[in-house]
Length: 269
Image 1: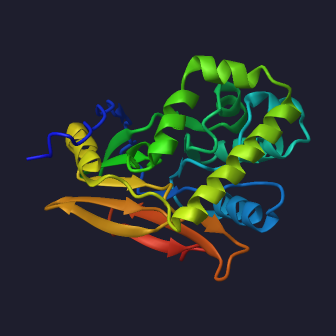
Image 2 (image 1 turned 90 degrees about the vertical axis):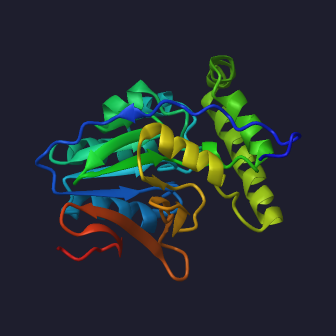
C-alpha cells in the first residue's frame, strides 16, 4: 500500500490509436538526434539513414531537433530547419515518416508537419504489429522524479505560455531557448544522470493502452527493462556522430524477427 503522504500519480492520457497497414513488414524507431547546424555529421548520418533504410516506415519519437522556436523559422527557405524539412518532404514521398514531439521540439506545429511531410503522432500512441501491441512515447512525461522539469513542462504546454513565447522576435526566442538549453545541461551535469521513467506510471500507461511494450527515448540510456511479467519498456539511443564512440542506433521491428537494436548503417536484412 502506498504511503499516505506519497504524491498521487498523474492521470493517464488516452493513447492515440494508429492503424498500421497490413503490408508493412518492417518499421524502425529513432529519437533524440538533437539536430543542429553546428553538428553536420549527425545531420548527414540522419539524412543518409532516412534515404537508405529498408523500413516501410520510420518513427521519430521526439527531440529530432536540438531546439525549435516556432514554425515561422520555416519562412526563411535557407534556414537550417527549412532545409531539413525540405529533405524530409522529398523522402516522405516514398517512405512513411512519423514524428512525435519531444521536450526540445514541442513547439513544432502544423506548418512543420506540412513542410516536412511527416505524419503527426500524439504522445502516447498505440499500435498493433505482428500480433503484439506497442505503446510509443517520447518519455519525458513519465520522468516524475524530475519535479522542476515537470513543472516547466506543464507550464510550457499551455496556450498562454506558447502564445507569449511565440510573439517575441525570432532572435529573442533563440536567445531564450539557448538559455533554457544551457540551464537544462547544467541541471543534468549536477544530477550526473538523466531522470528515469517512473515504473508505476509506465505500467499504468501500458495497461490503459492494453499494450505490453513501451518504446521511448528522452533518457539517452538505451536499455530493455522488465516492468512486470510480460510488460517491458525499451529505451532508444540518442544520436551523436561526434561522440567517442559515435552513436547512431536504430530500433527495428520486423514481422519475422521481432525487435532488434542495430547501429547505422544497418545490415540490409
